[in-house]
Length: 364
Image (cartoon, rainbow, N blue to C red):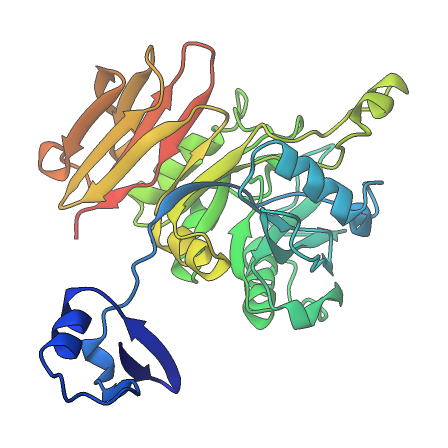
């Protein structure tokens, strides 16, 4: 047997090459032959990428408005088929241990509920500006406090949260822009120029107002307006869950239960937390309210989508939210060369109302 020493560790080579070296030299000593091999000459073991279902917004008893301990909330997500989850409690970094097979990452919701902001909220609404910091440093576990605000302007308050996310070594995600109409398309564009990459297109809490109303565009319309203005934003779907096994009891006492497994992301990555983080920042994922895709390809100026079920409609969307092409599923392709605008994305609709959204591709 021939042994290869690499980086202080020894690996055994087996197969035809090892046999040739051993059998063609009868004078070979009984002890293994140690060969120094250059680092670049030893092939790495390639780990297969897969599609991983994940939750980027959930609350536990560390938030103060949930009664479920982190371990119980994570068990709930594991039993519902999630591959990873980030815990995002209000101004508290929760860093629980891994729950069974599911990967777990620490996070925080940087919650700014301030008395005044500019522009001011509409009558009956409040200044509720929330940003998640995902995959933060475990060493920062515990309570987080903002430094004093230097301005009541919304853009500066959100920028303060982006700076806090960076300080915590996290990935910033702007939460529910239509909740109390915290952020419009112009603000999303501005924050994208400051480094924001993720925002909640579909926060599935009951009061997130994703659809907008007669005076306010939907969160999807906000996304298209920001993308048309040059923003490079990726869209996520989340639960914003607060209630788990206790949801029936919450409902029974006449309160609203904020439950889970309604909005999630599916990431194309190897099964480890750093790879998932990198894939989110690269847009290698899709957002979903329950509809699953077999594959998404965003390569060579083309966007190809294949749904996991029949009976879906695939819509290709361009600048201004214009639907450029509608195709029956389960598979369809469109290229940037076929669209006049700066970007192209896809939306998949199921007959039951569930949706999935790919991330855009851009004309360089």
